[in-house]
Image 1 (cartoon, rainbow, N blue to C red):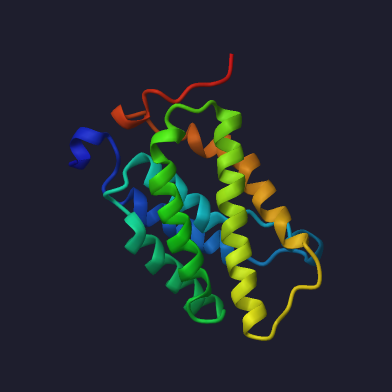
Image 2 (image 1 turned 90 degrees about the horizontal axis):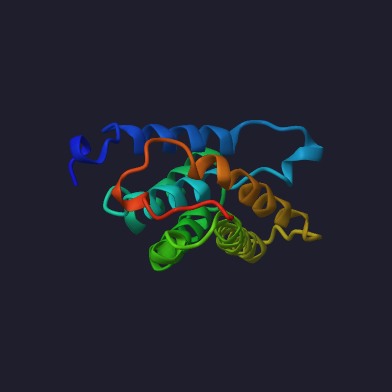
Length: 166
């Protein structure tokens, strides 16, 4: 789909991915770090549900690899998690279009929880265990941010069926 027909800017995916990467790496107070939204996960879910040909699993995997390199994490940790997020988003894409906003928020919560569980599983395998489940506050924040992200931008033909609850 060309950008002229879809109404999207040609660099919107890359620019929004860069913003998501910066927000993911931005320093936060210690008390707020556990509640950091999964910005790259939200980015992948958003673009895969809108225009899967623009990002796909490979693009999400590369974004995760970039996050690992820039963030100094175990190489492949975020790449694996974002690849799984992209796969889940591709599978759930058709359902996202017919669900109400609260149902979409629940799916975003589940997918970003899977992302966080995979990241922490790899972190535990590398010897850096997480003592509690506070890392699951990030998916809650991600789900709460979803309505704002879902409503951004002009609705194209792929998003015509998204609706608010009655």
